[in-house]
Length: 406
Image (cartoon, rainbow, N blue to C red; front, side, top):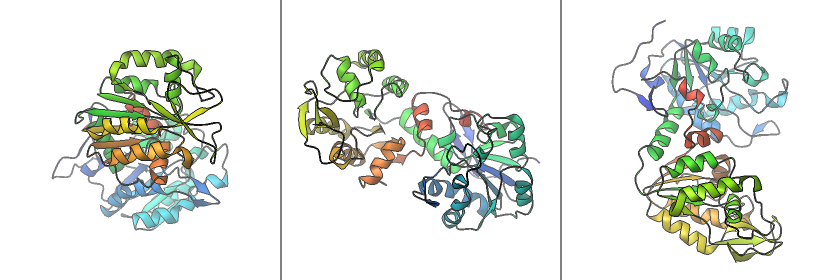
């Protein structure tokens, strides 16, 4: 079956280097469109605890249904070892239907007779959710036979699961060997935002990187250093930079195996690197502990740095205030405990109010902005955790590489 490109404005989406073709440019009426979404939502007692991933997926699905596609949705949920009932996608159906504004059918499996018979009865404009692809271990193995069975359900493939695109799984990458592969609207939005922030930034460009470990983000730090005017470091990973300078870190979390990398990054960064100058310390990482503000180079024995201090907040906010582009990945303190969330809230407020193009990524950062009441105030909040990090690191994501070029 040939692919008809619709007339009107061209729909192009940037990948890491090349332009990717968007599903919005394809005539989908009557076609079986197999869509990989990321509906890996947190569940509590059989109900969805946070449906932000369902909300993010809904526009692509609604758009395809409106244009008369027969929409077949694939996703994973959790890391099943077998067919655990608590990892079924079935409880997601009512919420997905509400968000898309249409009925959603459910197939008890993603391949075989339950899937094929459900697809065969699907009419134009209708939606079907397939059962968890990870109920089959062949998905994560990117098994060619399994990918072919999934692909047999569709005429076109849409990857809209940016958050899963750093994984070379059958449902993300394998099906593209058998079907023309296009970017969905969420994928387009992610790639556009990343490209705008990284490849075409308004200057000055500032990156704020927090979190616990230098080792998991050293590639990101090195790649960002080639692009940014200032690199601000917060969170427990700042301790590793402190120790690399020979400063005492008390009983704070230090990644001793990453000291050499921290030294190298600091040397490469020169005066681009901005570390905290004071820190909020406690004896334990618990709410209700006595707090003390200490100089970053004078943390006393038995105390641990758990947030950035007021002078550091001023320093970071000063850099953020004049920025044209801000990339933020990782809280600057233990933001999930209110006592150590002031730094993240204050710097987050400054980023939101900066007037810069603001890109926020990473699960912990997204959770922090939700809990601190900062949601909805940034140019783009990425749905991808590991995928966003790998993109920021300059790596090519397999789920993007397989998409048709425009």
